[in-house]
Every structure is written in C-alpha cells, then in structure tokens.
Image 1: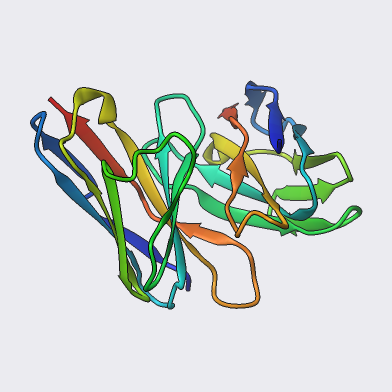
Image 2: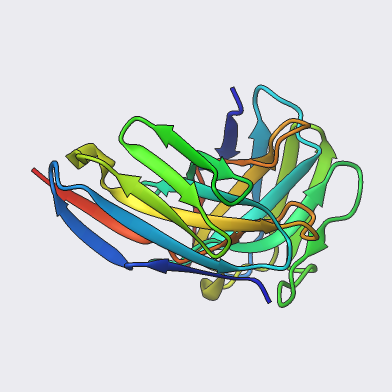
Length: 111
Length: 116
C-alpha cells in the first residue's frame, strides 16, 4: 500500500531562518511526486512535480529535491508570507492519476 | 492558466436535504476531475475520480449513492451530496488533471459544507 509521511507536523521559523521539510514515501512505481501549498480555507496551490531521483526544482525561496525514498522542500530565508501548510503527494504509475497525500507540514514564519 | 473554480464557496443546509457543488475548469478542458474531502487539521482524502462521459470511480468506503458525481462536459463536474447529515460537514475540494502531457492536478478553492 502506498504511504506518504511528512515531517515535522509543524514548524516555526523566524524570518530568514532556512529549513527543510521532509516527505518520505513508499509507492509501487512512482510516476511523480508533487508539492502543494495550502492556505487556511483554500484549495492547494501547485508548486512542483518531481519525476525521478536526483531531480531538483526551484521557485523563489523554495527548492524541491527527490531521492528514491524521500523528497525535501528546502525553504531559504523564509518570509512571513511563506506561512502555510505544505502538502506532499505521490502518484503511482498504476493509480489512474490519483494523488495520495501526506498529512502536511504546517509552517509558521514569524517576523 | 489552469484555473479551476468551485461554486458555491460555502453552503449551509439542513439534515436530510441535498446539496450540489460545481467544479469548472475555466481555461482548459479536463477529461479527468477528482473530488476530495478534507476534515479539519487533516489531509485531503480522495473520494472519487470523474471522467467525462463515463461513470465516476469511487474510493473504497465512499458511498456512491450518497455522493453523486456527474461529469457531463469537458469543463464541468458536479458533486451532489444526497440526504446530507451533520457527519457530511466537511471541506470538499475538486481538482482537474492538467492538459495532456503532464500529470499535475490543479485544485479549486474548495466548498465548505455545513449540515445542521
């Protein structure tokens, strides 16, 4: 059975304090790993897709990396507006395009 | 691009009544749409996969007679919660598969359903 585990559950950072969020996964045949950002009361906002181990993608202060067992979302010099819940999801090759989400990491960046 | 809308954004209904939620892809055609449910402080749980012109595929444990899904066009899918009860109160979010060639899903803003 596919599993996605995110850690930590919650993270509090000071503005400018860089850190990483972890997403560990087990899946039978990974088609893709996805990172989303979700603000309270809103739908998830797409950030990145990673398809193969060693792949990296960047967007502003965010950088996502992928290995065969886990993915990291690195946040460099975060700002308060980066506060949100970050969701990781995997898509198995035989899933019919469905996403299996982790429980998310709730990030709070204080000024 | 890849904008998905939902209507309504929130709804309150009485127990025993039915509620319809619409999901539209605004600037692309979506052959496949998905419906998720999210309880407070929980992650998204897939309820069903909706393919245009065919019956929806429901996840294990989701009652297909209670959650009716219709995907009548390439830009519209609807979820009807029939005979709603307080335990159906939740945040319902739809997504649409990105246009051909990519695997991302783009999500709507969600619909907050409260059943009294």
